[in-house]
Length: 171
Image 1 (cartoon, one colour):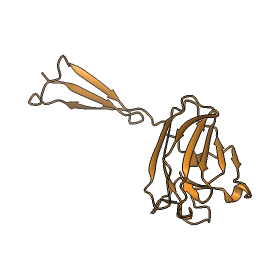
Image 2 (cartoon, rainbow, N blue to C red; image 1 turned 180 degrees about the vertical axis):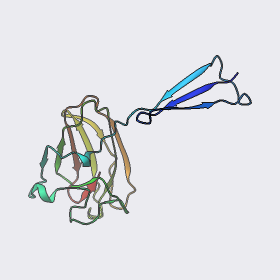
Image 3 (cartoon, helix red, strand yellow; image 1 turned 90 degrees about the vertical axis):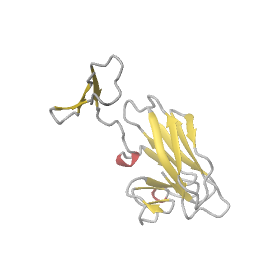
Image 4 (cartoon, rainbow, N blue to C red; image 1 turned 90 degrees about the horizontal axis):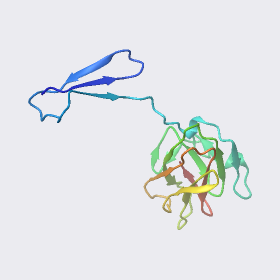
């Protein structure tokens, strides 16, 4: 039995076909299969301007949030690694976004900044429509980045906050 698999890539305008070798194990009852790639639905928050930034106590918004750079204007770092996209936020500040329609999952790598005081741990939190959607494990300066993933199906607002008493973190 030979199984033919057609791959269709939007925007290319033609199908690429691959014929399964008769020497490979057969796929039971398969005469043809189709796999279609779809456009990505990934939207990065650093491409979208926040709708609001509530600064940490005693600070102004301009010193509490920076997209694609560090708060001090230098290169953005995720742990020890320099990254080109993301944002740094002071602990205690709250950043609001209106996600694109159809948002389903929030995903970020998060890390405490090197300016986080010794002994201090930061917790990264995500709220969807006012309800807690996800929370990272507590992270200290020097800890490796952690994955923060949570479901936010159909959320009309996302609120990101770093809980802690000092320092900053990178999303």
